[in-house]
Figure (cartoon, rainbow, N blue to C red):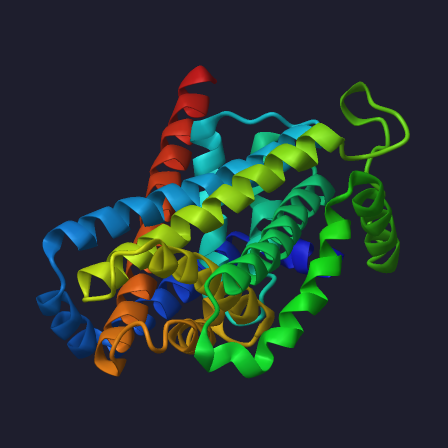
Length: 320
């Protein structure tokens, strides 16, 4: 990890990282463009706009969860610099490997006075909280609105329930210590923000988990709006099925680290979760649109972050 962070300090590598990330995002959209155009023709405009808004709220809530962990580690950060740091770093999701957004956040955090080890910890813990809460939301959604296509795999979901213990601060603090020793990173300060005997507080982890859980609900609502717009029944069963299905699809897609942002895997799981709710053609339309909208939102946050970074640098130059 130290070697990766050292390489990322090079300006040439920073530009290469941004170019590769944007290239992967553009490739995904371009490779499916004819299908996307056909999907847009079938969907009511209101559903598309509401889903796009929900996707933006989902990313904003995810940002807030990460920001809460960073604050708990002793680095409160305003919303504008948070968008600059989080937005640009999230482009790393589109590069196969699954860790580039974490490494990028560590490098970008230096400009805001955040030590690399704290940036790595905040992004890693935010991802862990998102994953664990996603498993919980997915399992709960499956219980309340079971999906016939995944019925044979239902038993696997219960293995994720014990993972909730990882959200207990003493357990998470020990996990941090073990991981940092394993990676040979400098330990985090055990008395951050005036606390002793631990790195993360119960309040901080609880707030970050609440933001993450709310993010999953909003993301599922975005999928439900698209599904209803394409002909699915406008019922609570559809909404719950979409919330649980999307959470599970994201978790499985993330764990498949060789795919950029879980591309392909996430869509396959989401399609299985919605089988029986929509016809096959509508399901294909939905999964393509859900990916397109989230990609557009990611690029939008990255663009806003890049603009904010440029403005901040100009201010610093004028102050000198």
